[in-house]
Image 1 (cartoon, one colour):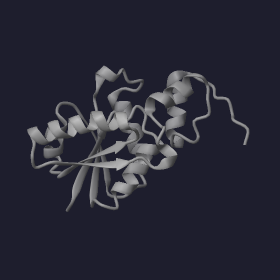
Image 2: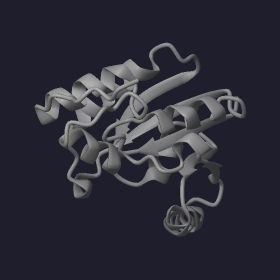
Image 3: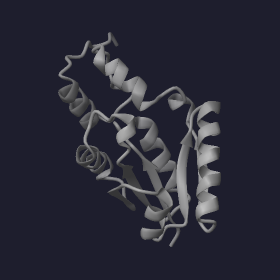
Length: 166
């Protein structure tokens, strides 16, 4: 069985993340979504809240499991008996960072590969940081986040949204 890990802070999980998961399932038999602790990113959701939100969003996607982790990603990948790390790329600056991380992970664990998925055109600009900024200003989040995440973000930020004219 070809098993991969898709790691991230998922603060919050976006439609871009879901797109990568669905595309990766065409190549892998099973995907573990690894929700990383990442305190240095100052998440708006706790690790437990992020894990629960991701589980809710992927509940109807077969062959996907959600687990939180801390520590080295390659240790988590080994623990899960996976062979590959999945990463999404939106921009050239993403590539610079991800390339460095992939080479470092390969140095630590040569048997684990990293596969990059280019963002779909409709999500190239999308980031969790941008979504949080839009949310904090009361913007409409429909195009960016799955419904349960919209509700959670609005509740967490105590924001009422403006509805965009259709």
